[in-house]
Length: 310
Ligand code: ASP
Image 1 (tube, helix red, strand yellow):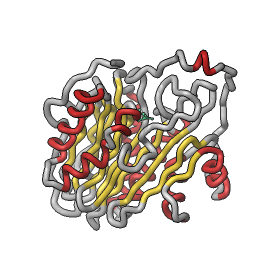
Image 2 (tube, helix red, strand yellow):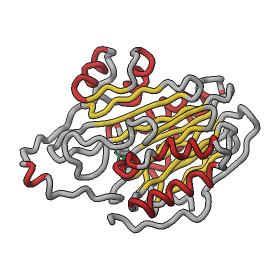
Image 3 (cartoon, rainbow, N blue to C red):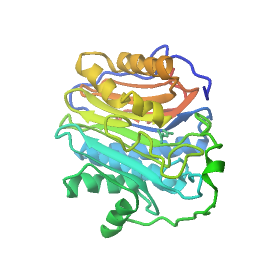
Image 4 (cartoon, rainbow, N blue to C red):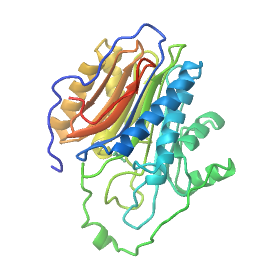
């Protein structure tokens, strides 16, 4: 109902790679607005940082984390330093990360005042027995590990629920959630994402980004997926896991993405874009929004970055 949707016709970028050739894909959100020159160069920076780690034998998990860290730091996207405010004027962020060999995952939701929610998500994965921490206690956890702070820059607004409930979120209007998927030399895949959410959200709203199986999924037996778009629809159709399940059944990334995004549009009028990387190295970038800022690099030539992949 919100944006002008189009059905995906064919895959954007696809390629076949020999086993265990490293590759990294990143995105800066799906929506209506064209990617800016600065955002394109931010995505290239993230691809360079992440790919060089892979090239030196680093893990897919670290490449995904570090690429997302660059995008959070840039302030050019709706994540980390650039995160939007919720309707009460507070910036609350979500992030998650998953590794496809062990199926370990970590996530934080509604964290405030930290520069890199993706780092907090990885810490949840690696230092606890849990998958997700939320709210002020997730922020406290990040403080315990002395994660870099981000100035709050909040403008507390005293809006009543009567007023806030009239401000419906504008789907597809602005975008800028960030995400990444990677495969390392060992053939392990990983996926991650970080966001400030969507426009005009109620305080406390959490989207798909920190929910494993919805915004992010990674399994060496299928592949890695990072979603962006209106989180409510992505949650209702558990999109990331759905795409991975289709990969596991033998679908090519472009076909799996196309079918699942088509269902998202036709069944619940969802709007989304996806990075899909099969464990054999084939990949697809696909969106049913007018644009999606994204790119990929396998170390050959220069990183490819664009905002239309259909
Ligand atoms: N999926 C994110 C959310 O709903 C927003 C986005 O991808 O732009 O919070």
